[in-house]
Length: 522
Image 1 (cartoon, rainbow, N blue to C red):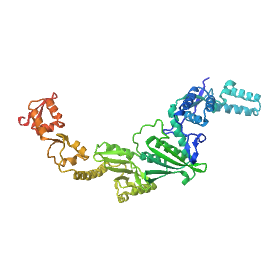
Image 2: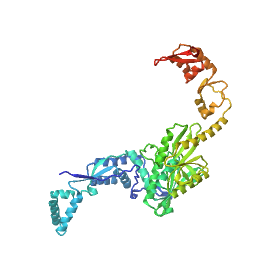
Image 3: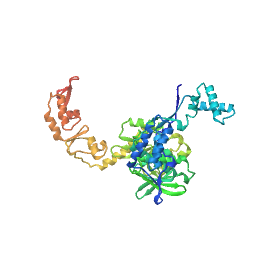
Image 4: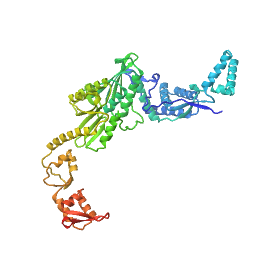
């Protein structure tokens, strides 16, 4: 008879919250603090033994695995630690019910036959019920016995174990999980990080309430726990746990101070990058967009190849005691000047009111807002000293480019005023683009100056002596390839412009090349 195998489902979310059961929390309360008992390299051997125990019991029932882990607990000096390692490993294990027929069907049939004979109060009556069930199911009594409770946890088989951990990374994951479990009882979390953008984004996704607090050493994000408003919920504890993972996975330097409700007593837990890390941190994902309007605009704008770089979700902007992350920032490549861009789509009245309040409190920056016409708040946005672009359906790229062009004109005027009237490059030959980069200005600004020691030929500046040197080395009838090498050796890139300046042209001979000749000879 073919055995059925029913797998125990293992749910693995994209960003798993691998907290430990509260009963396995290991913390020190010495000095009135609240310090998770993290592990170090001295525990790698124990982590390795737990991994090996799982691997050695593939094909065995869970009861045999549990017995082996219990023996390991007795040998170790901390049974909670063994159980913590095992709890993490179990999430990478697959347990299946191995039975010739579905256990639920066998139990239902067996209980029905037991009821039909007046109940089971002795071994003989049990045997009678099993035999009757076997007859109804057309299987031997041994098969009924085998399948009756095959789906109990202790009887399930460990059929596969594919750990994502090495002993070292298992210890790292244990430390992260331990800290996440401790945060379940947090009522307030204060975070300082070198990656505030990732922190604010994470808090937005997790719908955590927060404020920005200024201190002498910088800004601190204060996340208020649920007890300030309503009763503690598992959702909020899970959010704190996910937040810690986001902080540890994105920031290099960070510090977290949590107020913990320890069975009615308030304690303080301090964590930093030296305590917790995220093993196997995923690479930074490509930018995602909150709406099709944003994605469509980004694609069309970037295809234009303008002198503005488009950044998705730039650094947070302060708005009173909170912050907002604009949808985009346009950065002018010549000066680093930024214009922030927010797409304000159709939403609820509460959303509109919140967004307007944010825009009213945003710090002194250049902010452009594309606002859905149906909201009817363009004038209010303009009244807040921000530029509004009404749109319907999609944001017109031309409207945005027109605004950016106005900024370009202002920036060009400012940079031209900052440049000296005469510019004397040190080299004999240089392009206007390269010279503009040296001064950190647009090419148009450089082109408006005078160059007393150089002549402008096309988009290049060339000293007359360099031009004379080229003229002395070329003559009518020379192959174009040879002339091209002579000109480019000086650093000039526009060979045609140089030849034209010296009175030459190229007489092309099909695809085989060409020679130079005086224009008067054409």
